[in-house]
Amino acid sequence: MTAEDRELLIESLRSFGVLNEQNEYVESLDTSAYRGFDKQPGGGVDAAPVASDLYDPQQVIQSELWRFLSIHESLEHWAPMFQPVGGMDGIAKGFEREVGDLITYNAKVTSLQQDNDGVTVTWQDSVGNGGTQTSTADYCICTIPFSILGQIDHNLSSELANVISTMPYNGSVKVGLEFKRRFWEQDDEIYGGISYTDQAISQISYPSTGFQSDGPGVLLGCYTWRGTESFKFNAMQPAERIEWALRQGEKIHPQYREEFKTGVAVSWHKVPWVLGCSGVWEDREAQGYDDAVKIDNRVVCAGEHLSYIPAWQEGAILSSLDAVSRLHDKVING
Amino acid sequence: MKTTFLTMCALASLTPLLAAAQSSDQTEMKPEEAKISAFADTAEFGADGYTSTDGEQLYQTLCAGCHMPDGSGAIGAGEYPALKGNEKLEFAGYSIYLIVNGQGAMPSFGTFLDDEQVVAVTSYIQSHLGNEYTPDARVEDVASARPDEPKNPNTAEHE
Image (cartoon, rainbow over all chains, first blue to last red; front, side, top):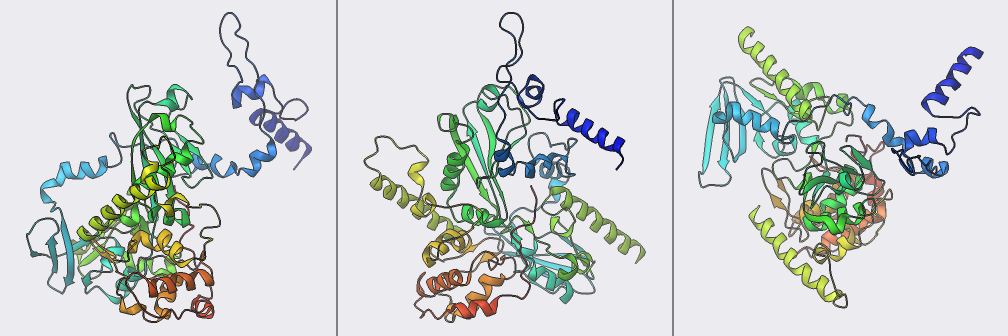
C-alpha cells in the first residue's frame, strides 16, 4: 500500500466513519447526524440540535453488534427483496387460485409404489371418513418432506431412500404479537426492519406495510433458528412461548405489557406435515444430494430440501421448476 | 393428533391452577403469566444450552417438545414415536445412541449434551413415562456412542 493509498483509506474512514480532523470518533453534531441527536434539529425558536452521547466503544464491541450490521447486505436480505401482498402465504394462495381444482386437501399419503408402468400412491382422508384411496399416474413429482417420506412405505431406489431416511430436520420458532397500537412507529420512529437482541427471541421484526395506520399492529416477537433455544421453546406450550416473547421483548420496548393484545406461536417441530422447519444439509456430497435430486425411474423429488436455498420458498419453487423441466424432457425425449 | 391435542389441553388446564395457587399473595396477575408452567417459568436460555443434569428437567424442556410431556408421542402426516411403554427402552444403548447421533429427521443432541446429561435423560425415560425398566446407562456408554467427527446440525445459519 502506497502512502497515497493510506491517505485515501484514512480519508474514507473520516467520511464513511465520521471521524474528525484528528481521526477520532467524538460526540458532535457530525456524528449525531448519523447516530441520532439528543435533540433533533428543528425550525424557528429553540431549534438548534443537541449532540448525543456516544456509547462506550467497549460495550458496542462486546455486544457483538457487528454480527448483525451486515445482514441486510447479504444476498438473502438485500433491499430489492419483495414480499407478497398480504403475507408470505400469498404464494401458496396464488397456486390455489390458478390450479386449485387439481388439489386434494387433507390427503395423508401412506404408500408410494412405482414399477415400470406407473406410480401408485395410497392415501387416507385425514379429516373425513373417506377411508383409504389410491391414485395412479405415469409419473410422480413428490414434494413430501423427507422427515415424513422416510416414514411412508415406498419402494424408491436404495440411493434415494438412504438420503430420505438420514436427513435431519431443524427446529425454528416464531411468535407473532398483536398490539393495540403501532407504538414502535408512534413512540419510537421505527418503520419496518429488525431489532436484533442476544436474548433467546433473537429479533423483533416490524411490519413493513400499513405504516402509521390506526388500530392494532402485529410484529414478529421471536424468531429462533436451530440451536437449543429452538428446542426450549419447542418444549413449551404456545402461551408459554408468548410469555417469554413478552418478557424479553419488553426489555427493548417497555410499552409491551400495556399494549399487548394477543399472540400466536409456531414451532416447526410441532407442524404435523413436516415435523421440522427444513431439511439439514451438513455436507451435500456425503449425504448424497446428487442422488436425491435424480429422477428415480418414474418418481422425482422436489422441495426446499432439494435446493441450495434450503428453508426458503424460493428454494422450493426453483427445485420444483427444475424437477418439472427434467421430467418433461425425459417423457418427451426418453 | 387427537390424543395429543387432548393431552395438551388437559395439561394447559391444570397449570393455571398451580400457578394461581403459588402466587395467591399477588394482587394482580398479568393474563399470560397465569398460563406458564414451572419448567417454562424457570427456563434458562443462552449459549450454554442445557446446563441441568436432572433427567426430568432435561426431558421436559427438550424431548417433551416432540415426544410429549407424558411420552405419548404424536401422530400427524408422520409420527413422533411414543416413549411411553416403549420396549426399545429396556436397555440404555438404544436411547443413548439416538440422543447422541439422532435418527431420521431427529437431530443429534450429542453436540450440546454432555455424557452425564445423556445418562440422566436416558435413566429418566427408562424409569418414568410408564416405563419400569432398570436404568442401566453409564457415562462410558455415552462416550463410546459418540462419533469420531461429530457434525452439528444445530448451528448452520439462516434468518
